[in-house]
Amino acid sequence: MKVFRKIRQNLITEGKLRKYLLYAVGEILLVMIGILLAFQVNSWNTQRLKNKAAKIVLYQY
Image (cartoon, rainbow, N blue to C red):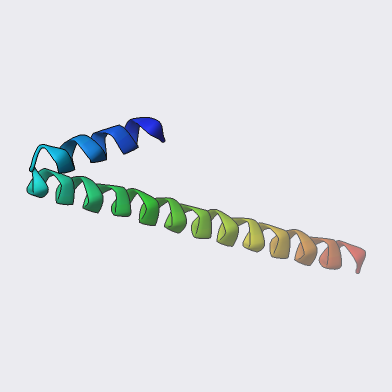
């Protein structure tokens, strides 16, 4: 995290606002991708557990 902080501070102090904004958008996109991946993994796990429970019920009868 210190690396990102240094990059951000250097871009701001050097007056490179455009590069800073691109950097900020990139960070936001990475966070959004991470959140979407977490939701997808959670969805897969929920579906897997439902399928497992359904198989158990079917095998009992």
